[in-house]
Image (cartoon, rainbow, N blue to C red; front, side, top):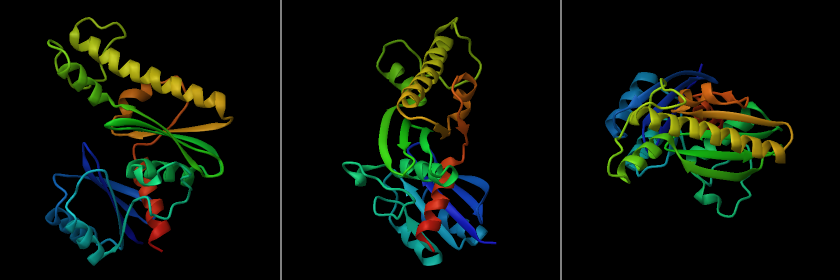
Length: 242
């Protein structure tokens, strides 16, 4: 059995997924992306392969450390992928988006796929049955919407996300929860419907740290998997670390 570590350095969280062969085993949330933390994970799991997806300015020395101890790949526009990216500037595609579209192709090959990532932003990523990632759209994520309403008004408070709220808010907090979460759910349903009108037999995948806040409110059928990005990183690692 071979261990692979998949690192996801995002704007909100620093995470590492552990795979035994193709099986996702566990997720580790990291306090920092530094040599000490990375070395501790290497010592604990003894990985044969590692892959790094980063959308932040991480310390470059962690790449050298991973390359020293493992077969290492850094995800970027030059990576070999199980799909093509015929867009205007492929080098501008976020590593997180590349990972979730790779997972969509790996899990549902030769299908029209719409992979939706719920994180700092919502990303809508369309991959056709020929495995061409044609792009999509980006809109503000849940926490960004909460923060924007707080910072750009005089009186609205900064609140935390919560599953418990009514359709008709009865105070400021529940009004904000209803507006943001139900508003985003309606947005997601609407975008899915627009794609369904354009592409027949569309498969929709949903992932991200905020997944659980929205699946109860969606009308559209989706394949929900909180580990989709990791599974895409694993597939790309296998594609590049043969």
